[in-house]
Amino acid sequence: MSKPSLPQGTRDFGPDTVRKRNYILNTIRNVFELYGFQPLETPAMENLDTLMGKYGEEGDKLIFKILNNGLDHADKKNQARTDFEKVLEGKNAKGITERALKYDLTIPFARYVAMNHAQLSYPFKRYQIQPVWRADRPQKGRYREFYQCDADVVGSTALLNEVELACIYNDVFSKLGIKNYELKINHRKILTALAEVCGGAEKMMDITLAIDKLEKIGIVKVKDELSQRGLAAEQINIIEKYLNISGSNKEILTGLNSLIGNTETGKKGIEEVSYVLNNLKPQTFNLKPDPTLARGLNYYTGIIFEVKAPAEIKIGSIGGGGRYDDLTGLFGVPGIPGVGISFGVDRIYDVMEELNLFPADVHIGTQVLFFNLGDAESQAAFGLMQQLRQKNIRCELYHESSKFDKQFKYAEKKNIPYIIIIGEKELKENTCTIKNLSASQQETIAVNNLGNYHFASS
RNA sequence: GUAGCCAUAGCUCAGUUGGUUAGAGCAUCAGAUUGUGGUUCUGAGGGUCGUGGGUUCGAGCCCCAUUGGUUACCCCA
Image (tube, rainbow, N blue to C red; front, side, top):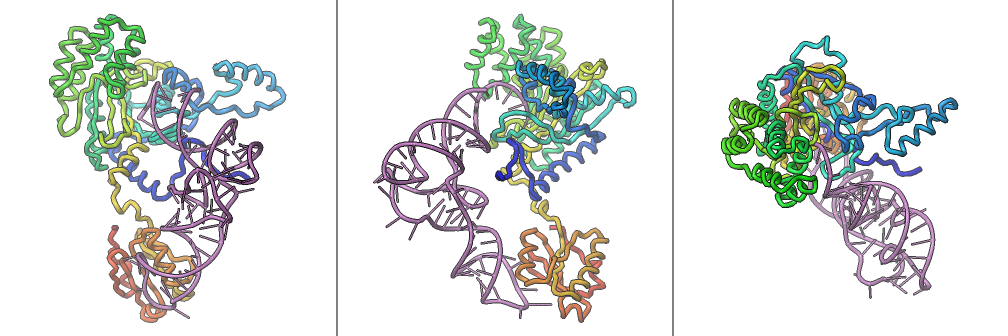
């Protein structure tokens, strides 16, 4: 038998990790609820059709496909062989694979909205916290299975939604104690306008892909890439001017205005970004317009967001989102616009771990351990324990009568803050001894008073 | 898909130019300690050196292959 192992890019989560992650998820969930979002869950797998072509060419390659069952069935063998030939050519064959693991939460949500559009009341605000899968090569901060937390509003074009989503980012990160994150905002129309001004509206994708890398590879290489992608020198010149726009939020907007403000689309984009900025206090929100922000997913059409982790932690983006005018149109139900954001929980976890931001009491599960000091003693302890459980105190009784040393060490390892000793003496006197392990203090009280004892939570 | 690096005890790692019986810390278990833990002391268990081949009198170390992990590119949370 070979050693047990995990598939590449997946992880087990031990008790401590799950506790910490739940702390993050609960924080996010509470904020979503606070803003009136409703929970939604969709299956782990979707029909392959639902996902293919929604994430661009690269994205398609990263979708985890599921092999159909029953390929060895006698009647299907020949069909399976010819279909497999198609797969070898890089095509999809329904006979081989027709389902896939979900790649993100947005497209399944769009599918859900398209299927239920008549029943929903708009604007429909949903949040969704589920794992997604990508057949990517794992590396630092990148996994093949990871959680996403999304909140989306569909059925409304109001920019109020964008403002609220920015507020959600701010609320969540400040509750988690992540201070120096940076919330960047841009607009797809601004990028479109840049392409128009360059005289190559159809080059929009090439331009955005290249300038998105500015921070990583520098202006010189961006220009190289642009010329490789077939842009002329004077076009690249304009793009360079665009990339050089910097300064305060106001200066950035003015810069954009003078460069692309004379186009219809550019004007509209700048207006919308200004609206969001004006309705928030950028200094308290770490909110910054960033003309170089592009975001890969090609369904965005309006404002786009990205959250960068504090600079000292080189982990990149910990969240992102944007507006899409017609996501459900892909599923035959046009005219439902939406806007959404996403939190990268696994990366937020890593950031919090590195900055030591988890509160100490996330590790406390069991609050009280009853020592087991013999048959009669443990029977008495069991009765008291059930009373405490009735009062919502999490407690357990050591599984067998053994030395103090062992029982203490068990409590310590499980981070149990209190122990209760009921031995021969206590049994006789109808008392119990409560010890606070971290304070190393103990007191003996009558068992009748145990129900009213205050167990501090940390 | 492309490229680099790594693989030795449960975990983190030493291991000299290739030379006798492969080590340490942590963890585990037992004892000092039959009603008071964290610190300490003593002892014990634990290894096909990822796998297969090759070079050599001799391989944990060198060569080839293979598997797994990891990092970077592409792309992305």
